Structures are given as C-alpha cells and as structure tokens.
Image (tube, rainbow, N blue to C red; front, side, top):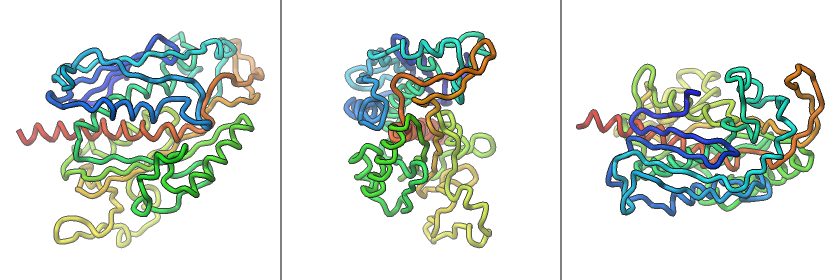
Length: 354
C-alpha cells in the first residue's frame, strides 16, 4: 500500500491499524534544537481522542504518545522522530458481523477489490483512528511555526449554521463546549441536534472553518504546488471530508470582478480578503481561512441493506462505538494538517533565504 507519507521537507509517514497493537509515525525533516512542549502535544491528543463527551464514540483510549527517537533532553535532534500510540481498548468482536459484507459508503468494498484482503476490524487502515498520528505531527509542526496561529472550529452541523464571520466570534469559547463552536447559543443547538440524531441510530455531517493568522508573505510555490492546492489535498486526505473551499470559495463564482477584487492599502495589505490570504498560490500576509465539509458517518446503528461477498443484498445493523457526528473531534485534525502544510512550506522558504 502506497500513500502513507505526506510532505516534502517536513514529512510524516504513518503506520498501524485501528485494532492493531498500536498506531505510529515517523516525522522526518524536523529542524534540530526545538524545545518541545509535551503538554501541548498531550493537549492536542486529548482534543481528538474518543470518549471525551456524550456526543462522540465511547471507545476509551487515552492516546498517550510514546516517543522513540529524534528527541534528546526535551529538544529535537534533527533526526527522524519516531513515535507510537498504543491501542488499549479494542473490541474487535464488534466487527465480526461485517467480516463477509461491505458497509455502504465505507472503504470495505474497494479495499478488498484493490488489495485482495482487508482488515474488517474497525476498517483497519481506513479507520479515522489513523488521524491520531497526524495530530502528533501537527502538534510538533505548530511548535516549528511558533509565530503562526492556527484555529479551527465547527461552523455547521446539518442545517444549523454559525452565521457570524470568524472575525466576530470569540475563539476562547471553542473549547468550552462539546461541539467546539465559538457561540454558546449555536453550540447548544448543535449539541442537542446531534443527541437527537444519535437516539435515532443515525448520523449527521457538518463543516469546520479554519483560520491561520500571522502568516508571512511568500509561502507556497506557483503552478502545481500552490499553497491552497496543498491545503486542499491535506484536508481532502482526512476521513469523511467531501469538500474544501478557501477565501470566497464557491460564493466567489457568483460575484463580479469589481466586487471580488481585494484592493490594496498603501502598506501592501488589502481592504478586503476574498482571496483568503493566498494569491497566485502564495501567501500574501493576510489571514488564510477555509472551510472543510464532512459527510455523515457511514456506520448507522439501524438496519440498512448491504452487499456481502456472495454478491447478495442482505439486511444488516451497525454495532459498536461510533461517532454520530465526526466534526467536533475533527477540529484538531484540521488544525494538524494545516500545520503540516505550513511547516513544509516554511522550511522550503528557508532554503531560498540561505
């Protein structure tokens, strides 16, 4: 299986399955001499871990990271950083009923057809549990990007939207509720709706908005390695993501050029920021902001028709511990992937300056 690595200079390779002994990763290209804040890494993992509230999967994993290499006396050495995250609460029997069948909208069918074998326990390699490794690497990437601030939050669940622009919300409220929405009233509506959906054995999707501030001018490469193209690839590599838009996004397609152009101020900033902080694939110093759309979780705790390996359509009901809505736990994952992209371009940019 190819495609387990991301990045050019700051590069992450992940390994492991949802119900294996552990997941893990190797971070190559991290600069030497960075004093790591391990509490910050642990905090990011706590934000992503399962079982943190009543509206997410109740699988109990502490997601404690064990670093194996690349760190000495609390500082990075410049050599590959190896780490593992032990799996401690697998319940593989929860998946025995799908051993010979393929869940709708999951990777089950295509994995088996492509590789001739699949790990049906929690989806194996296709499980969103793999993203725990990304959060570890993203937490380190954030410390490489010490002056850049990356903030993500839930901006919609189903038909419930946070209508305020990000400039009008209080980011300090994001971690004060289970949904991670920076508006108490909207957050309560979202949480109640997710609970209703869960009672029905159903699931619901939503969107996450990410804002990146204090970005220097010049990150990104023209043509094929544009900054927004890499951000899009990174976001679309996250499980359940169905869409990505930055700046004005699809709304920009309805506008006239006279409405859409970001006119300059004398200091090089722009009066508006419909470009989303990126022009010509290169950061322009303004805030970068984008939105990521997540589909409803595919596993339903209600009966639906599935295909089995005898090419028969049979009735099946989902079992086990699953998120009724993935977006609250995906917030730190979006931040982590954004950090990986920016850290990579930051190091690439440094090579021009040396």
